[in-house]
Amino acid sequence: MFRELFLGFIRVHILYHASLGPVYGLDLIKELGGHGYHVSPGTMYPMLAKLEEGGLLVSEKINVEGKIRKYYKITDYGGSVLEEARARVRELAGEILEEG
Ligand SMILES: [Zn+2]
Image (cartoon, rainbow, N blue to C red; front, side, top):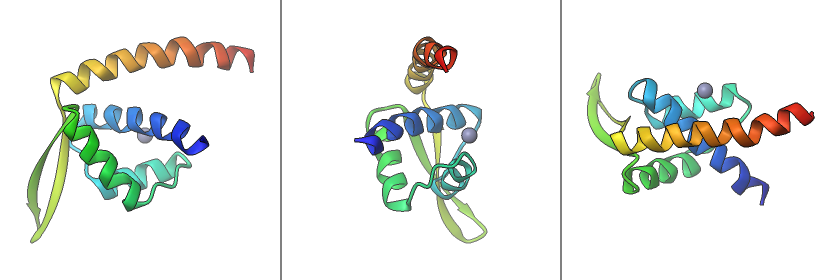
């Protein structure tokens, strides 16, 4: 149950980072680790695949020094979902943070 709750935050956070520039799985795992979220590759890669299936991200395979890396970019639709998520997080989290 708690896992499901945090996975939602993580998805929104992935969209946010993808809105700043192309991202890839390992980079996001490290980035989220810096926020105190330990996400395994077995969670991250299916999550990225689902965001792509949903049309929020689009991937491109890029050869980086002989290694094929899958980069994800945010789509226009993903951008509008992020904007909506931003407003919703502000609304709901704002109250929680005030109470605290
Ligand atoms: Zn971050």
